[in-house]
Image (tube, rainbow over all chains, first blue to last red; front, side, top):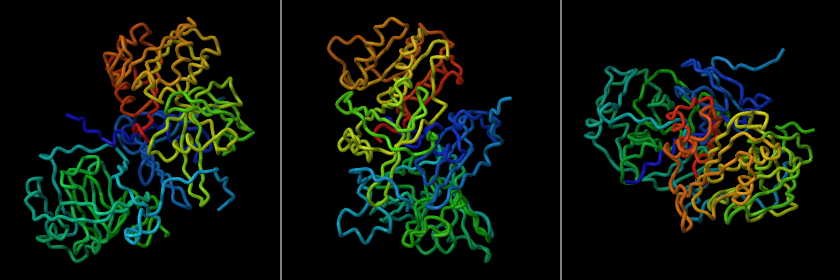
Length: 95
Length: 208
Length: 246
C-alpha cells in the first residue's frame, strides 16, 4: 500500500528557513534566540520552531505543543508580525 | 519601483493563461495551475470520523449539529467551479461534492441580528464572511473532491468552499459556522488580508 | 562592508558539475564578511517586468575559501529557479545574493566532541561546508557522515568525500543507496531508519552532536529515531529542505 504523503507534514520546515525574513524584521540573525511558548511554556531557539511558509503568510509553531507562536504576513506595502504566542524572547546582551 | 537589478535571462514561471479560451476565466493577477497545490499553516488535523461533528451555532434559536453519518445523509450535490488562491494560482473546473450551506441552514431559525458567519476549523483556523455571501448557492461544505473522499492534506474530511472568494476563505477541516452580529476578522484577515476577498476585484489585502 | 541582510551583486566565477543533475556555482562577492559552516545565502532573481523570486541555498564551501562562496544546486525538472541556474547562468553572470544567514544550523571546528552528520540528497551541502572546514582546521574529532542517495551516480561530492575519509583524521562516510546499487554492493540499500542510525552511531559517543539535513521526511524520521535511541533533542540540529523536488 502506498504511503499517504501528508504534504502539510512535508511542507514543514525549521525556523531557520525564515532566518532571512526574520533578520529583515529584527535587524539581526535571531535563529539562536530562545523564545518561550505562551501556550505551553517550553523554550526553544527560533531556528528550532516549526515553520510553515507555503501559505498566504508564514507561521512559526512551537515544536512541542504545536501552538502558533508567530505569524508574518507580507502584503505589497506592509509586513505584519503577530507574536501573541511568544511569551518572551531572550537576547544575550553580555556584560 | 526602485531600480532593481534585473537578472539576465530570467523569466520565471509562465504567469498568464495557457490559451485564449480560458483567459476570461482567470481573475486579475492569477495564473493557471494544473496541479492542486497544498498550502499549509500547520500540521494536518486528524479528527476520526466517529468524533467529527459539524455545528451551526451563535445567533440562532437553537444550535444544530450533525455527526458524520448524519452529515452524509443530508441532500448533497456536485459542483464544478473555478478556484483562485491569493498566492496567485487558479485552477479551473474543480469537481466537488458536498452540502450547500443553504441546506444546512434550512431547518435553522436565524436571529434577525445574524449578519456574519465565522467558519471555524480543527487546528484553530478561522475565516469570516458576510452571511449574505454564503447563501443562495454561493457556499457549500465539501467532502469529496474529484470523485474521491477529500484528502486530509486538502482539508478532509470536510472543508468549506466559497468559489467566489480567494481560497483562504474556503476553510479546510471546517467543523462549524458561528453566526454573529459583529464581523470578526479571521486567521489571515486579522493580519492584513482583505476582509471580503473577492478575486474578481483583486481584493487580496486590506486597503485594496 | 555590507551587512548580511543587504543584497549584493555576486559574480559567477565558475561552475562545476557534481552529478548529472547537480551543479556547483562559485560566487565572488564584493563585500563578504565571511560565514560559518552550515549557514546559507538567499538568492534573488528578478525578471524584466519586476517579477522576482527568492531561494535559499546552503553554502557548500568552507569559510576559509572566502571571498569565494560556493553553492550547490540540484536541477529540479519543473522547478522555477534551478532550471534557470543550470540552463542559463554562465561564468561572468551576476546574481543578487545576501547573507550569510542562519546561526542555528552551524558547526565550527572550535566545537569539540564527536560529530554525526546525516544527509539526504542535496542535504549534504551544508554538511560538506562543515567537513571542508573541519579538514582545513586539522580537526581530529570522530566524525561520521551518513549519506542517503538514490544511486551511485547521484552521490554529490563522492570523490571528495572518499578523499577526506582516506586522510585518517577520524572521519568516515557511510553511504546508503536507496534505489540503485552497483554490482557487489554490500552497504546499506534502503531509506534511513532507526536500525541503521543505531549502527552508524555505535562507534561514536552517545554525546555526539548531530546535524541532519535533507528532505523533510528524512529529517523527521532521523530526528525521531535518534531521540528514541536515547539522544537528547538538544544534541540534534535539523535543516529541513521541504518536499523533494521543489
